[in-house]
Image 1 (tube, rainbow, N blue to C red):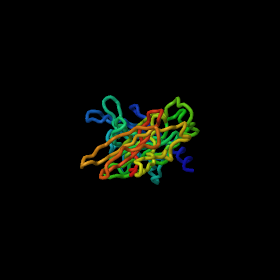
Image 2: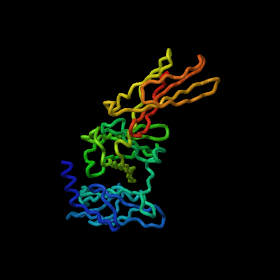
Image 3: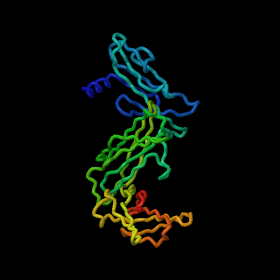
Image 4: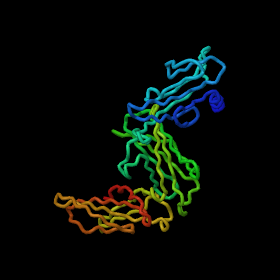
Amino acid sequence: MYHLLFSLLSLFSFAAFLDAQWKLRENVYVIESEWNDETQGKRVELTCDTPDEVYWKKGTEVKGTGKTLIAEVKEFPDAGNYTCLTTKNDEIVTYNFFLITKIDSNGQMIRSILKSFKEPNRTFLKCEAKNYSGIFMCSWMTENESPNVKFTIRSLQGSQGDISCGTPVAHTGKSVTEYTAQCQKENYCSFAEEHQPIEMFLEAIDEVEYENYTTSFFIRDIIKPDPPQCQYVATNGTVTWMYPRTWSTPKSYFPLTFRVKVESTKKRKIQIEFYDTDEQSLQIPNTGPKDKIRISVQARDRYYSSSWSEWSSFCR
């Protein structure tokens, strides 16, 4: 019933852009506003095609009467919901909702809603996969100043239509909020060569401000295994570890390589040594009885230069 009503309403409304703009979805439009004092706002002609006498409101403010309204949109207070109502009984005939995206003098979108990650390459939208199953996690961050910001993440149209994503989940910290969404490429074959990258598209709407972000990748390029599980045998100074439970199998086809970090404290001086190996155990050189040792292990794909995992919890 809702979709039918929505369709009927759209038949009675029309937004004619006197400057080139674009439609985000039914009755929702994005105004590209050049963010300086000299540039004029975008003029939009709204038409309410009905035989009844009507008037226009933006929020609670009456903006005009008659079937046509010319609105000028430049700043955030100009954006929002423009509603056409009948003068007889104040029934809503239709509406048009306007969002603003800020652009510079070169027509490029000015992005300020998200906070960039330092790695890789100060990106805004980051995706990682724990294995070759076709499941990956995308994440992005905001400052804790926009509690009402809404996000939509999806793959771009085309051959990537078989990718589904869950609802974004917020993880609030002291100064930033990190959002994560789990996505999955359906019918993904772990053993097949990838020929076409996945392209992800994130939309951010903060009240009436609109921004979007994109990222493109192959699954093999975003692999980051979970840390190995390790333990230390004090009797012979050997540290052993297991493949992460979340890693792809069989491990003969998806082998990992490992890095062992040994932090030792000798006479109040900290010494750090690294050992690289393809094995699942390593004998640590002899240390004195009073030496303090902390050992941890990380892993990455052996044959493809993936990201290293985080360090494991201390093996001892």
